[in-house]
Length: 121
Image (cartoon, rainbow, N blue to C red; front, side, top):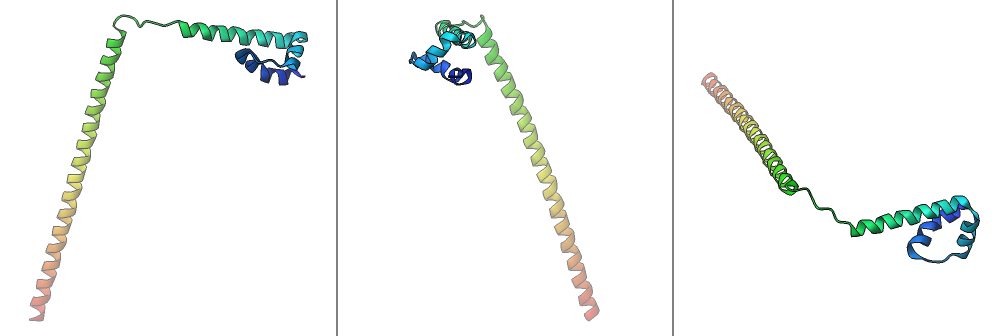
């Protein structure tokens, strides 16, 4: 077997304790693959130790984190409310402009009709 083929099988060999005779024979004679196998075993041991090790947060860290989250949430809510107000103001201004335009058009149409009627009589 070649080192590239063995390298693909080493994690399975270490993690599941399966036996591959051809891989084992190659590793016995290849220093490169022996080193790679040792690295995998070391990594697996470190990961197993992490399972047993728990970290306790520093005193007050949870309260500080929750406070920071609450402050950020309030800040975003205020910003969202401001942008909602801006949108409402823009809609009101736009609606007013459309209404004014429609009223102006109605007045102009009414004047043109009255002029036509006066000219016709």
